[in-house]
Image (cartoon, rainbow, N blue to C red):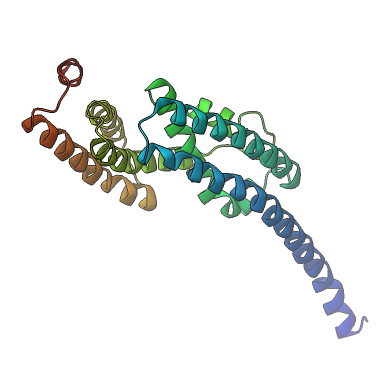
Amino acid sequence: MAEPTKVITEIFGPFQDSINAEQDIRELIRSIMKDVEKSLRETVIAMQVIHSEVNCEYIHHSLLKARSLFEEVQKGFDELDKTVPPGQYYRYNDHWRFSTQRLCFLAALIVFLEKGFLIDQVTAAQMLGLHDKENIHLDLEDYLHGLLNLASELARFAVNSVTLGDYSRPLQISKFVAELNAGFRLLNLKNDSLRKRFDALKYDVKKIEEVVYDISIRGLTPKASAEDAAD
């Protein structure tokens, strides 16, 4: 008959090995995400120029810098894909979920400033470098959180555009966010965090509408832009 201590050791020994292995993976993921988050912060800083400049050249330069920083993000997610064990995405994704949401927001902001339309999930995944990975991917929930964060940033952008004397930008933003709001209303959201974040969208819409109303009654609305917004 085996000794009780030996039996306990044989049972719990492998458990500790498993715990140690998981901790090693988490430490490696944290190390990778530090570099990704550094690029994320630098991108946020680069994009702040839109709130203080109307000069297209300055904004274009910031967009180019942001694009180059996304290349560093892609390298980070390449390493992350190699680190996360197959089939264990949801076991570890709490380490990069928030950063991914922020990166989706920044990707959406870049595309809006460059092209004027809404980024889709596939394009967002491509910008982040998550479109062709084996062990990690871009969750739909993270993509939607990013779009909702975009709406809040655009509400701020609309106010600051008027301060800087750009009266056509709020009209573009108003039309864009109204369409985004309409899209979200097609969804029957059950997720608590996403639902709460969506509830805040109506305040962003209202804030933008107030900006447009204010410049309209002051006669500052460019005629062509006003007609486009009405259409």
